[in-house]
Image (cartoon, rainbow, N blue to C red; front, side, top):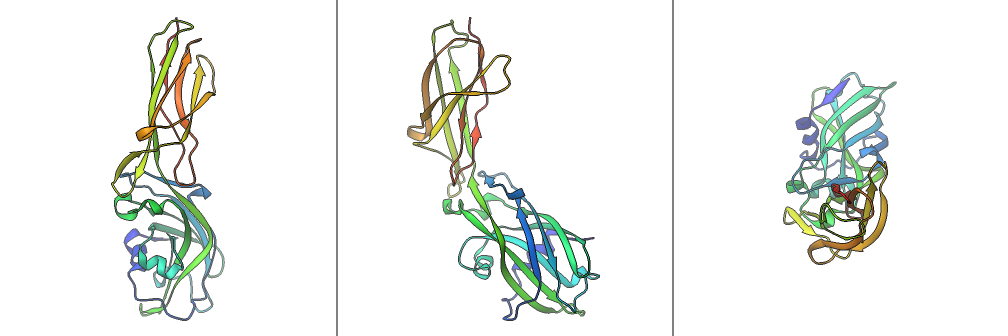
Length: 262
């Protein structure tokens, strides 16, 4: 088993320009984050999982992992070569296990620190999967290098957060409850959150003793992502706001607010 630490893996992106000749390496079965969207906030580091398979061309042995490096990265743009040089989402580490002659199965993770890797809200889009491939001679000099697009893609989304408050508490049966809250999402330019306006958000209720929420109504967010509506109190239970997400923003649910009905 060969482990390529983050420093070694990231070095693949600071090497000289790719040579014209293809390396002959086959990269397949690439999966990022289990095939699910990657949701990123404003400050917390995210490390999505990666897995892939690669085969070396004849003349290179898997007995010496220090003589090659195959590292996945994400980019959005025209080509893998331009994407790698323009800045993308790179590997944190790779862990590879030999699987037959000159073939390896690899697992690892990417490293996303939003303050430094995501600087535009346009980064909330579909990212292509690229592979940085470097082959070395027995003396350690670079023999061939290539940036390549591999099959697959992944959606990177802005993290959303919702809040809720149901009042008054407690409340008389049949009286009106006012449920307020807000919906915000990550702003990767300002490195803070901003209100998500004109978005449909479901008001959901969990009856005391029940195991699943039911949707009572759908309300659109107003200025700065504000939410407000009224409902009639009938039984004890918890209220929450649920947002199903969009192509650029992840889904979220607020914490529950329990109301005692007397």
